[in-house]
Image 1 (tube, one colour):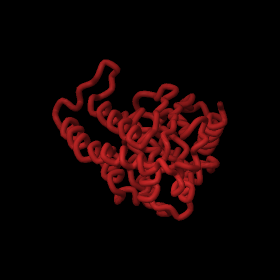
Image 2 (image 1 turned 120 degrees about the vertical axis):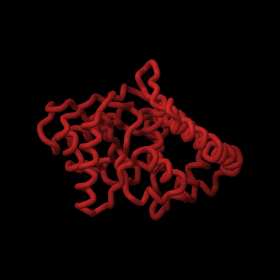
Image 3 (image 1 turned 120 degrees about the horizontal axis):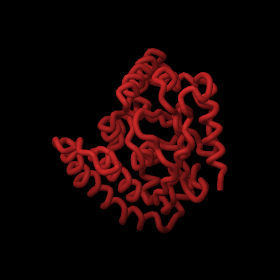
Image 4 (image 1 turned 90 degrees about the vertical axis):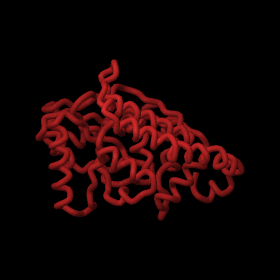
Length: 262
């Protein structure tokens, strides 16, 4: 639904009236409680599944945020435990929220996100690694930090396209970002993100031409309810594919195939 169609949606004011109070409660009341709980010594307790308690709390909060925006979450496949590089197609800012609702990981994201309302604050506390686009020195620092985290047994999430698109295609994957996985000897797990039934709302969730973060945020908040599918695909084991460029190509091929899979 583009901005013009959104303006003709007679149910949009009602959705705002229902969702905005829940958003305020979720951010101003529930979030401080979650942050307090994960700051306590008990935060590192592990659940029966082996997941740390603080990770479960953050995933729960992110999943509830998706519900506030009208998304019905569908998780498919099994995310790998431990040190893994998760790579996904990039549609909108909400991709990070959707992925975090299923698996905790520190994302590589553009530096501008740090200044975004709510999302930027959450990203910083979610161990986001910030990158300045077009700055090779910044990318070198990102790769160094990714390698350190992977060697420490932690996972990292990246969007190898490097930017969001119009939702109608998956762009080429930049191979250099896979260097950390190669050097650390950890698996790469592709993840397909689809919005709507079989991905029919990709373009509606994506940023429109010239649309700012705030405009996209408010538009999605008033959009009709829809599905959000996070599909963890077959991982690429260390050494299974030769070289970072081939890993990038293989990861993209698997995501593209999953996007087309009914």
